Length: 177
Image (cartoon, rainbow, N blue to C red; front, top):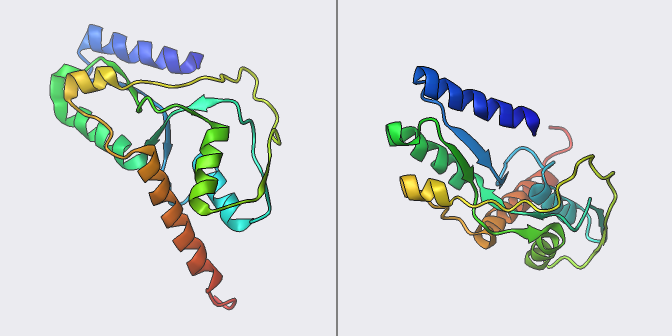
């Protein structure tokens, strides 16, 4: 966190002193990945798809907000197109849609019709864990007009459809390939 703040201050100073056209993003948790199931939404979806009975998940208490990758890319492109009005600025990028990891897992389980058991607290607590992170993109919206378009509900539907399809194709793959 300290390194991130230092990097932001360096970019802001470089803009102030030298006119460097830098912009900083404090983006929330992105999801909608196609290749990586390590992060929380993809991890819960893939674990539930792979195991109908029991899965292991970390902490259930943290509150996080989530932005679909399509919205995040559109935010970046919007800022790139905006010109001087965003230079030297720091933007939070993410909808104020904070949910606990417990609530998130329940939403995913319902969409998957998954009735298994979740073993919580199966990972060590990270040093300095922050239990409430819920940003607002109000400043970015005010300056550029950008707003996220993909709701968490719709984004979860997209992610589930992708991983279901991917797993169904993998199951029918020939063992010789």
